[in-house]
Length: 363
Image 1 (cartoon, rainbow, N blue to C red):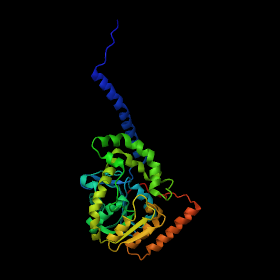
Image 2: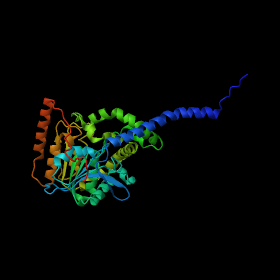
Image 3: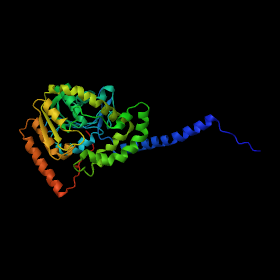
Image 4: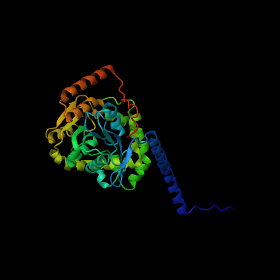
């Protein structure tokens, strides 16, 4: 009689564990492969600069001979990278100013640095050091969305380096509620690592199209926005964890820091849409206008969370006014509204402005 060997309890357990680990390993392998693909599709166009033990990435456009504006420093929002602001502003401002488009610490191709960079004040300090390294003494600081909290921190902590502040749909004040569940999961020890390395890429890719459209809502998202700005870079495990850590700390941070905004003395303009479903303008933009003495609030009717793209002309006019030109920004905003209304009536297809020759090569 043939004796069939019996599996031991340990062998059974190992088989069950292997059955569980195999799909997890496959998911991690897939995510690693896709992360490399993201970087191949959107290679770094900037230059890495040591700012004190870690490197910040930025596209630096040297001051042109006939510049008519002060230096400009652009700070992108959450889940983004410097391409978002490069595409919105570089071509329109080429030849007018020295420009620094920054990957915030731990985003895009910038290294994270220490734990202080998990809050806007630390990131503002990092950008100030980067300005010093790049030879920029003072600048107009331009911040979109989450970048608005960093812009406010910069104005508070580095007034000597601040020519002015331009807030675009900023996130700067406390808000009711919390943040999305996946930001909590992403920062939990062990579980967060597994989530970031196995789940985030397929989950994020399934939501990328809808998510980017929601950011622009109610306005049409430029058809080539994803192609030109690389939003998938945030799905890389390290970048996603850093993004989540930023989000988790933001509410507590602005509860404390928003009480200090009255100390900001730099010329300030706030531009917001009245249809922003991402960052509520009645809390953040109006709050800034209330808190910063002498600031000017420009509300563009019909615009959502992306005035940098929908009202680029208004933003550039604000830079000009901060630089000392006598401009009626309210009139500029009304003309922008007329343009947007006409485009909507004509069902014009909105596309991202061309980057222009050499735009993908940081100096």
